Amino acid sequence: MKNPETNVIKVAIADDHALFRAGVKTALASRKDIQMVAEAENGMQLLNLLKHIAPDVVLLDIQMPIMDGLTTLPEVKKLYPDIKVIMLSMHNDHSVITRMMEIGANSYLTKDSDSEMIYQAIRTCFEQEFYFNDLTNKALLNGLRMKRPVEQEVPDVALNDKEVTILKLMCEEKSTREIAVAVDLSPRTVEAIRDKLKTKTGAKSLAGLIMYAVKAGIVEQE
Image (cartoon, rainbow, N blue to C red; front, side, top):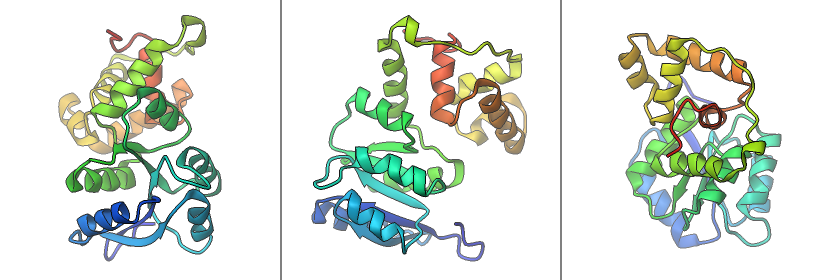
């Protein structure tokens, strides 16, 4: 968890390519608020490390031998629900991204992401639970479009105008601070409304809220 004195985020990485792991460590080495605490070559090794080390954020490659990221993600979430998991892949397949977000990923980055994006994803997931980018949003929206209407059951929820506005802004990749400015509320109030939206819609995460917004027709699917 966050250290109040140093505010250092502990990060672990699981990737079977040593050069990629070294590259990420080098890219984050200059960040005073990031500390790399563990690295693993596959999911099984990561789970063994997590018995002894408690990172705040895990960078998890999808394709690894022995135990891949798809298998590892739900295990990490079940055993260590407070750990934020950022999935890494060479591919930007929308169906894969949607699947990852649905089963608990806090973000998804392609492995050609620059150091600034990796840093922002770690920081944002740590502070706000999720880091959405253009890739994740398009994947979630496109994934929902592909489902048949019968699969898109929508809970009957009454939302007021303010809640609808905030939900739309969330779907537009706006940060809590940006939303607060747009609706003239404090960031803390926006977070409270976001939590209330989760309770009302039954969504477990921001990814779930985006899915609800599409299913309910609150955001355009075109």
